[in-house]
Image (cartoon, rainbow, N blue to C red; front, side, top):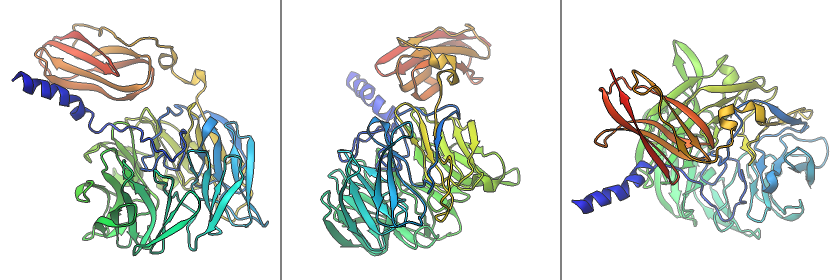
Length: 516
């Protein structure tokens, strides 16, 4: 009996935190805050840093040709991006800026066409990007050309993945091309394969979208294959989007599409690693490039539409990893001002950042419970995803049209000042503390305060006197600071209860009394 109890105690943390999501160290990517468009090669849209709680603008910069699938962030929080529009000249540019928007260097491409793909930063700070002139470029950290190769029919509007060995994978027009770090190309014929691609957490499996034209609601599939293009399984769809598939730490796959039998009904799908359906969640609508984001607790957040009180609304929905709805937040204003064409991102606290593709549309920040913390209006289109720097700055690039060349104030940095942050979060906390609740005894509610000297996963749980869990008050990623929460459970009987705080290696338990 004791051995069984010991085994249960040993496996309990694994069960409790089985869906906790951790950063996937990728040896070929730069060890930077945001080296690729969706943050990592699993398309999670998740940052390891805490983004701004306010919409205070730190600076703006004119990028006259617009910014679309950018920026990404490298060492020292330098920013890298191409521009969106064509020029009237014979050259276009790719930029490296410092965190204050000052030029570090500009790389010229011999074309009037834009360099508007999502860049990829490698371990040695080299940068891959694709130009609309159908060339793939690799430049070094000083902006000098290493090599370029011509790839016919290549699409420049999306990120292409880099495997752990530094090989780049480009899928287009029935061909999977594998480009080595030296620029050598291997071609594999795979019918109807196209962008986008993601890698498994371990890096040995590719998840690819096939069918087409991708993003036009026509039949397609999600396929799993090895690094040589040999297919393990295929999951057929009545319609398939062009968003990057999201892969969690357990290699579940999340994407938007429609059923083969009910092609007019759209879903967020979750497939198991073996390609069988785990669950699907019915949604109102997804745009071509929509993709979900996943926070540290395994919760999903994404844009869709819903009819609320007989009104068609744009909404953000959050699900847990089992596909259960956590909350739905209607977005402010008219539906057309909130249409979103790409994936949201989330920070280390679970805050969600997302914006509209419409000129004059809204950009939002929501907390992990779906409460809108702030919104702002951009004069241009926004159909990429923001990047979060190591100091918490949120970088946003906007644009309008591929023929409009007079953009102003369209690269935007948003960040909190010291006075923007609430006092209880701004205080320096030196030690973990769990304080006695007040009032105690209580009926029907009480306040519990606690302090965290560093960020991490926090659990605040209530047990009865024999040690059975009766309530979970907090179970999420928190930044360092002082916190205050309310506890009120009308289903509990009068009696003595225990509340327990756990974070990192710290744990503490106190008693409180409910008197009804």
